[in-house]
Length: 509
Image (cartoon, rainbow, N blue to C red; front, side, top):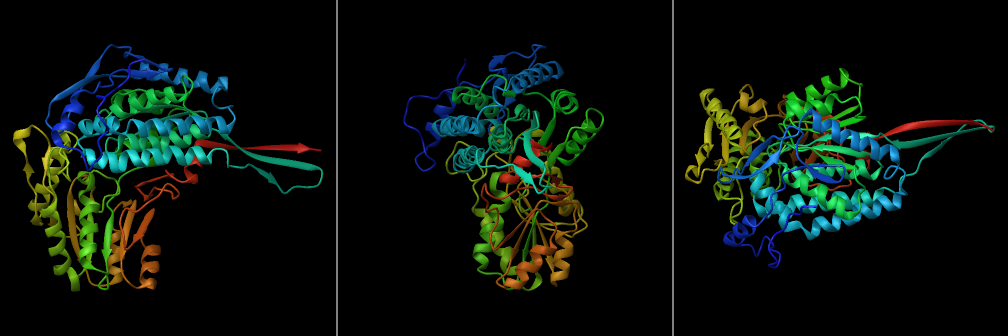
């Protein structure tokens, strides 16, 4: 089995890393390039591959097998055989726990390698990949490993001569389609709970960032996961993605990505075997800053990190700042100053706080939103330009725009480092603005008044509402949205529900 390795030098931490060292180690990586089906690396049936272009410099870093419907068929068949054999689905829960825990330890051991792959593949700073993506991936694997043998079934209250058992069973073969912004972490959020309860899987990573998913499958096999339990098929949405969504032998699909593609998966399910679908889609998450907000310097820092972290390529990015008119000038001045302290640069440079956008097409989309906002009358308070063109990479300045609620940039998801600033005068107006988009993924309320915090949190229609913080989280709490931000939840024990189905066994004594 081909493995992906780095040099034998001591592992780097974000604090000790230097750009030249990171570039040297990145250049020594073996780029995963083949599909992973039934425990083995295989070429695409068609023989086709696609180039992986690194967004940091626009250069090709490898070619990856391009899976299509024939390869999805192979992967689903392998997953079905593995599920029906019971080699995983009927294992004692503590044995499944051991495998997931071993996988978590392997991810820790290969943290630098995985972070480098993530960084060169989709453009995020190496330091962020280590500090967030790898850390949370390990947390997800450990959390569901520990949860797997602590779930109990039910005995229903019935008549004395009747016994009714209510049990949760694995749903079967799960298709998972994950996005390019947090490739490994999003995969772990789906793979860990689905495998923990005994399912088998076919994972289709985004074509913009397939490398860590392929490496994860290798490490899972090394951890002891039986062949066929986790299969990874890179490919494109209209071919591999659609084939997975329409497959008659896939029992459930979980998807994270755009609303337009999420709708297609609902159509695929309706037109095939009516498989359950769970969706985590986009967001247009607001900060609601009340006039009594605590410590505006801290608020400004949180607003800036909430939109500029990961280059704004986060579904829960705090892309709207709703600020009370009485403190607007003070706060916006601080946010603009914070934006100018961000360092846009090569993802392998430890000084960079913003890396590259994922691809040239997305770069043009983000720049198009900014140009469109200016054409509609928005005022650019900071940023707004492409930078570092000479590198060949896809870099945009942190951007702050003063906008009106009717403007496109204030309503639609940009998925880039672009903050829209709006002003309100009353709590009612703030709630109306917060709820005034099709999305409902997350929000934050900044206030020192406990009653205001509770009232606003209840009135804002979002899956997560933070109070006096932003993007704080833990594996113990669910993540998902209201409205067109989707349905179903990742993280927490609740995530396990969508990968199981209930069975009633009624016994007459």
